Image (cartoon, rainbow, N blue to C red; front, side, top):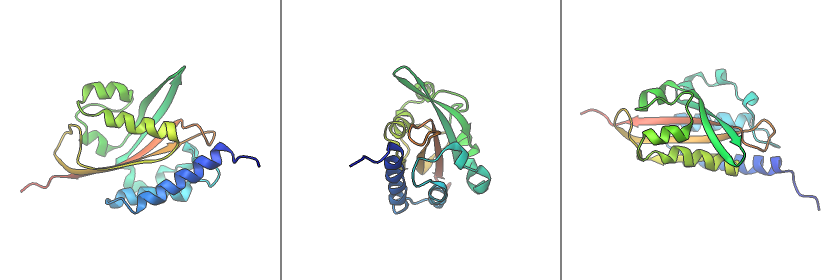
Length: 173
């Protein structure tokens, strides 16, 4: 019996993962983003950047980030290409057009921002995180929730990561 193509297996696993995340997310924007991704996700491959139309989710654009995957021999580096205004406002350091491993050097406790995206590159599956922040931000947060999603030009090798972030600030008393 012939094995299913890698792109099909990855697509099915990623779709199942995103559907599972819907029962776990707490922030409405994250749920909207996941619903949108599921609506554009091909059944037989990972979605590509061409599948993503930012104009379809104008109310979510401030929470969007796009990182490109650069492979050099055995090393994988992730470069922030697009950084929404919510991320610009929350981050105490510049993110746009920087390699994430360089950003981690400037932010103690921020290695999760690299590890979580590398997990998406390695597995081809979306990644969800919610809870208390583990790194410094420009303002106090009660909680954060985000999802990283793989994008692939060939349907199998992750070459970009599309993310959506939702921050809940500590209310001022």
